[in-house]
Image 1 (spheres, one colour):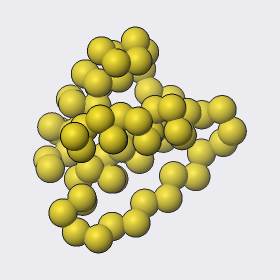
Image 2: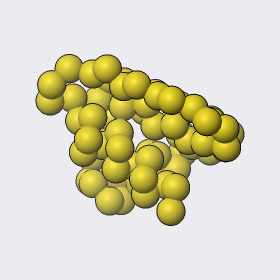
Image 3: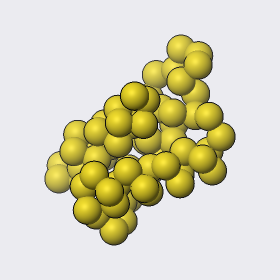
Image 4: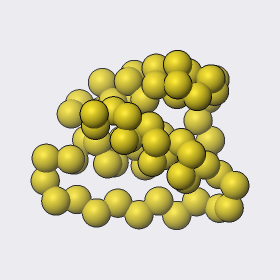
Length: 67
């Protein structure tokens, strides 16, 4: 998937499903890494500090976009 499309879709999902106006540092990069390479076997590690929304945003937005 094109990175520009992923970015626009992630921003839309973030606003519509979660009501947030922005991503925290690193969240969008994790989402883009997962979705832009999903056709191949890609392993992505998101090393973010506690409380930076790894599960709530990074995993959830990517999951919603895959459906």
